[in-house]
Length: 190
Image (cartoon, rainbow, N blue to C red; front, side, top):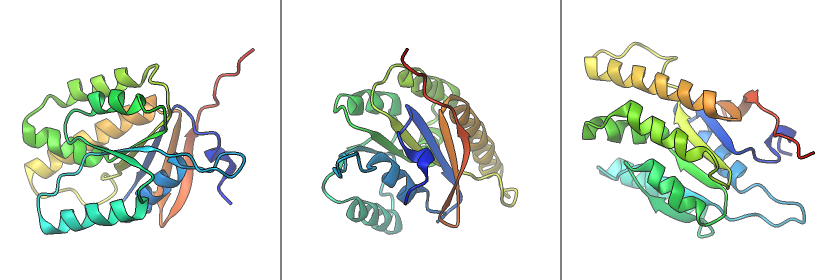
C-alpha cells in the first residue's frame, strides 16, 4: 500500500536520491497512481537524457520498457520550460526525468543555468496538471576531483534547493524507501 501522503498528487513534487535509490520508479508510481475506481491514469514523460553512448542508450531503453506504452514521451534535453508547456496540453500528470541530466546538458551547451531554472519555475505557476521532477542528490559523496565536477555538484545543489523551495512535496529516496521531507497541504476551496 502506498503511503497516504502520495495521494492526491500535489501541483509540484520533487523526488531526490542518489544513484540507484529508486527515484525514477517511485516517481513513475506517483505520476500514474491509481485513481478511485481502479483506473490508472496515463502520464506524460519528459525525457532529458541523450543517448551519447551505448550504456546510456541501454538505460533509456530499460526506462522505456519499464514504463510501457501507456506513457506519452517528450524528449527534450535543453528546453524544459517549453516541454512542460507542451506536456500540460495533454491534461495528464507530467514526469520530468531528470533534472540532473538536464543541468548537465545545459552546462555542456554553455547555457545560463539560473535563467533556465527561472524559466522552469515560472512555467510551473498555473501549469495545470501535476508535475513530478526527479533529481539526483549529489552532495552526500566525495568532493569531486576536477573543477568541472565541483562546479556541477554546486550547480546541482543550487538547482535542487530551488526546486525544493518551489515544490509542494519533496521526497528523498534511500534504498528504495521514500522519506517525505516536505508536504505542503493543498489549499482548500471554501
